[in-house]
Image (cartoon, rainbow, N blue to C red):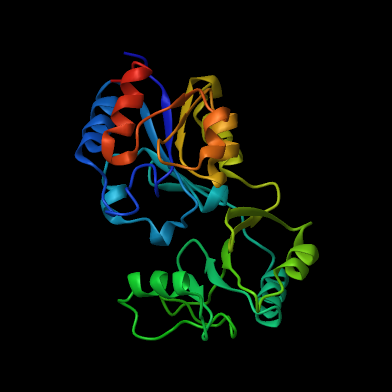
Length: 267
C-alpha cells in the first residue's frame, strides 16, 4: 500500500450534506489508511469553531481550516492569518451599508447580523441553536462565546436588495470572492487558500507535495485539487471539477471516499 498525505474537504466530501453523516465506509477507509501509514488532514472552508467533534475524532493528524486561514498539526496551532482590525471594522460597516447577509467566521466563533434574513443564514443559525440570542456583527462586540470577536473569512449571501457588486469592487484587492452558488460567495483573504494551506503543511512536515492526494466537491476546493499531487472529485459534486481532477469517484453515500482510496492503492 502507498503511504501518502491525504487532505479532505468536509461538507459534500466526508459528510453527506443531505443526511449530515459520514458513511461507515469512509470511517473505515480513514482508519485503514492511517494504519497503512498515511497522514490524514482536514482541509475545509469551515473555521475551527464549527468543525464537529465527531469529525475531529476520526483520527486526523491535523487540519487546514477557514480555507487556509488557520492550520493545526498534531493538535497545535502552527499558522493563523489574522485580518487587520481596521479592515474588519470597515468590512462590517459595509456589509450593513450594502445590505449583505452572512456569517463572519473566526478561529473561535462566528457571528451573524442582528437582522439576518436570508433563509440559508437562518438555517445555519438554527443549527447552532444552543445560543439563546442572535449575535450581532453590526456592533462587532459579541460572538457565541461572549469574547471579543475577530474574524478571518466570510460566507456571504445576497439578494435583489443587496449591492454585492459595489462591495466586491471595494474589497477585490483584499479578498478573493469564490462563487459557491448564484447568491453565495465564500470570501477569503487574497493570497490565502486551501492550496496555500496544504503547501504549508507539506513543507512543515518535510513531505513532497507530490505525495499528497486531495478530496473535494466544490468550487472552493479547486485550488487544493490543482496543488495536490493527485486529486479526487466526489461524484455528485460540482461538475466544474470533473475535468480538472485525476479521478472522479462515487458520491459520498456510495462509498466515494473508500473507492477512491482503493483506486489509488491507499487501502
